[in-house]
Length: 134
Image (cartoon, rainbow, N blue to C red; front, side, top):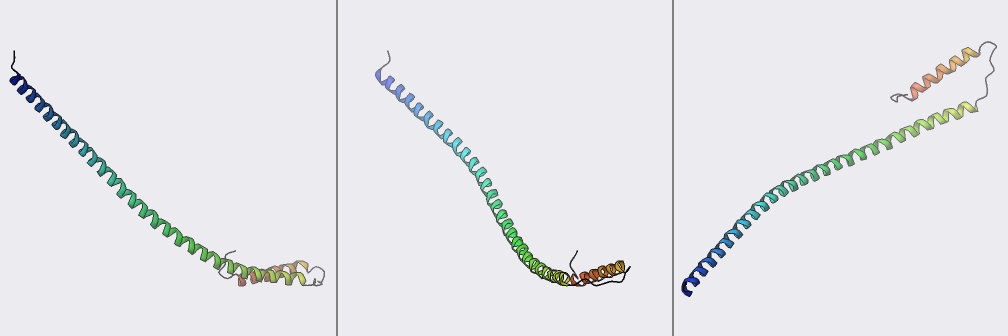
């Protein structure tokens, strides 16, 4: 038989190897986990940087859209003022035309008179709308 001292030494050696193996395995797992976490951290940092860049580009685009919308609104107000002035002029002309009495014409002169009125209307239109496309 084996003496109790030898058994105790064998048990001590086996216990030391078991603890040593456990620590080695634990260190290996920890190193593997740290490596995986570093890889995940690098990937997430890159995604975070891209997200920050995207947010900045969206902010710049929104600022540009805001400026463009303000300019369009300002231009629309100017155009409405100009259109209101032109509409008032045309409304005044229409009221004036409606209030006129028919002019008696000689027989056979109707076509010439209508042509003269159309020419006068077109000339007035071009004079009043200089710079405005029809």
